[in-house]
Image 1 (tube, rainbow, N blue to C red):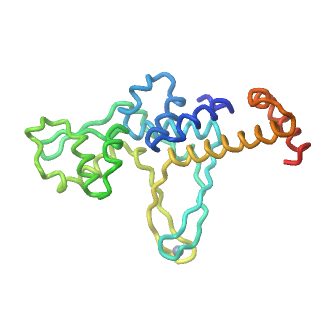
Image 2: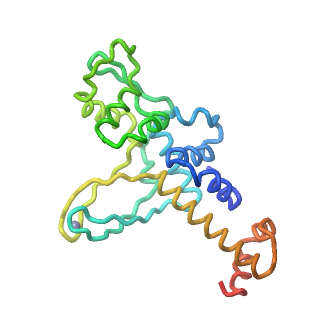
Image 3: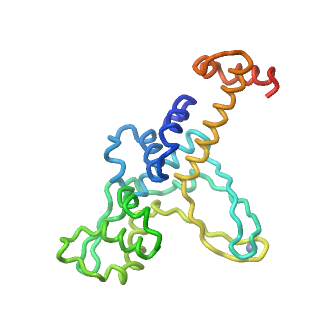
Length: 236
Ligand SMILES: [Zn+2]
């Protein structure tokens, strides 16, 4: 896995800034999986996207992830420490959406293209039913209105077939003992880190351009050590 360089971070950030989080994850995935045509990425199982993003995160920012979560019961802020190596341990590498049968219907696990069709749906159950419709491979005349009764069963089967699609963590509050599960969204986390890095780089360019009159390409061509030394000299 090749890490993102400074120029690549700025280019990706610029392209993703106005995009939906699903598209941002696909943009990052395109860098992480250059052997795949970008047009294929929206059809990959969600777990394949998450695995690529975990590896990209490891290459760019290291394997250790520190995050903060507020307890659902007492509000106490907890620090959680994750390791991409542990999250990637023992995973499957399937790029083909797994299929399964239930109640005489055939389904496949969801992909990013399916998620994009339900982004405007505000009701979570309606969204889940629509997602199931997207993932149903049986002929339309076989589809009936029983999807809502199948939601729990299909959710369990999909989670087993594509476990990295939805990474969630079991947490226990050290203060009040509350236990709950929280979703871990590697796409959102990695985008936030790219966003912080890009804005830091632009702030450095701004400071040195103001102080010395250099252009952006000239400043970005400096080694990190030289740039940091000049920033010290101008008091940043
Ligand atoms: Zn608590």
